[in-house]
Structure formats: structure tokens, C-alpha cells
Image (tube, rainbow, N blue to C red; front, side, top):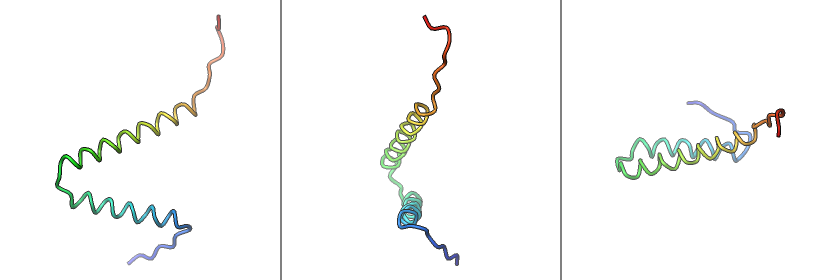
Length: 65
């Protein structure tokens, strides 16, 4: 048994929710619900990638008319 010491409540909550989500996925057999969950995760992933792309965009200077 591994004893893990968490630095904050947020870290502990994240670990616990991840564990519960993984157990839920393993025990869920409703394909419609799993598909909806996959869509929500994909949408969130796209949103995060869009924000990161906008933040890391560098303006190209030169040849302006």
C-alpha cells in the first residue's frame, strides 16, 4: 500500500476525482453516456488548445502595406 502525502486539498481532490472517474469508466456500459462524455472531453481539449494557441501566437512583422 502506497501512502501519498498531498501538498494541498486541490491536489488531493484532483487525485480522488481521477480515481473515481476511472472506476466509473470501467464500470459503465451505456454507450450513449460514454459517447457524450467523450464529446465533452474532446470539446474541452479543443477549447484549451485554442486558448494556448492564441497565447503563444507571435505577430509576424514585415511587408505590411
